[in-house]
Length: 568
Image (cartoon, rainbow, N blue to C red; front, top):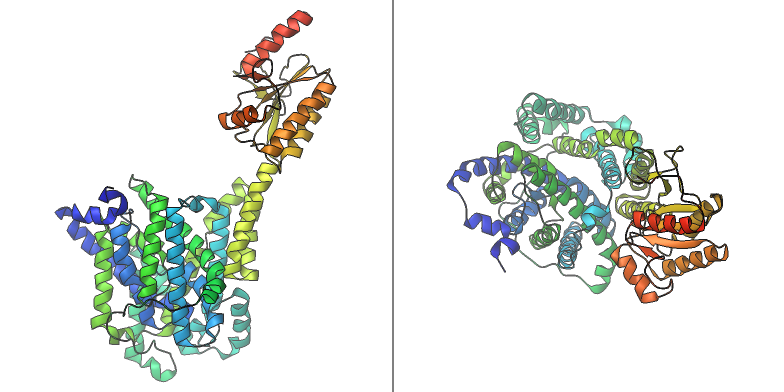
């Protein structure tokens, strides 16, 4: 198979253009400048030391640079996945740092294997499964949970890092014990990260904020006033090791790993697709799932944690003008150099500065513009978004993903169970049929009901279909025939077939003939195999609504005089 299909990143690097080198180096250094403080901060979400966040960057970025098809996407630690990993493994680790790291490695490898299996099984469609309101609601919930869990770093008290309610209760308990020097440094860093990018969009706010806090802490001796510092960061690159586990442990972590896989992939694809569309190319969801899976295995074996597509660092890459996957290679090398040569200065970073980075990350996950749009376009989907957020805040980050999936399924079932339908007629001057509910003045042919059902006819909506068709027939004046416009019935199962036969028999008992028009091929195949409706040709089956109407008009003419209504 062609190299461009299986290793698109490597193919791009092998056909590298000299003109790309300068912008790629600039973009790679810029991405690393943002990645270093945010990766350290996201490691703090789970309870890891700084180096673990950086370990989760290097090998995954190199792997994705070879396998990934997106020229802009940067992978690395992500706020949402970090919060989910913390929720999954912190209770199981019971305060043991080594156990916490081992569990993190296991989950990362499991997520990687699940992603690879999903890509091979062509399950990339899952990126489109969660509706945008559901995904926005889920990320809003994670953002609020992240903010609540990180307030302690800004106010100077210790608290658990997972859970919205836990974070709020800790805030209420410790508000009186706020450490003022910590609060002052954290707020100053936060304000710098908020306002600096507004004035200078190309300046990495997180990096400048952390550098400011570090210099202020050193110059003012804030450590002696009780401001906590990050502490010693081991020098050097991570050792590669396959995590040891058991079948029972894998079983216990499987549900959480599956939820993390879904969110990690959906988040990465949302970012990759948006930037690919901006630059006029497409990304293959199934291939991206495999690439992300291999990158996550890389994170696991290099003592890191689950990674995803990093939207903020992808935006930095795009803004600086990165041209190819070489940006990820450069960024990984810069982070590796920082670990080998600048590990001591990394330990001088104040903890409240990392808290400010995490608060900004949590705030960035909350999409107020999307909420406003949902309210304007669909109150139902606005409510679905809020329900998903409430689910995350009430039952937790990881169970929240299954709440989101359940809501998405219920919404899909509801839309299919009670789909739109219509009785059709004609209005002079408008081509084709119109819905009588929208055009009360529309004309119909005497004795003919033209009915459209806008969904597949399956076991869970078959009774509703029967109820609606018989209802509109009973409301018609002296019905003689029903013409079912079946163009929306894209599928038909055994229950739907039986229901269709029951409707035919019920109408026949009332001396009303049932005919079908525009039947999709898949539905028609089921009808042929069943043989329950009779011979599939006129007067039972028509290729178009017009053909069915003309057949009825000829029959009616033979029975009575020609109808006065002219069909347009």
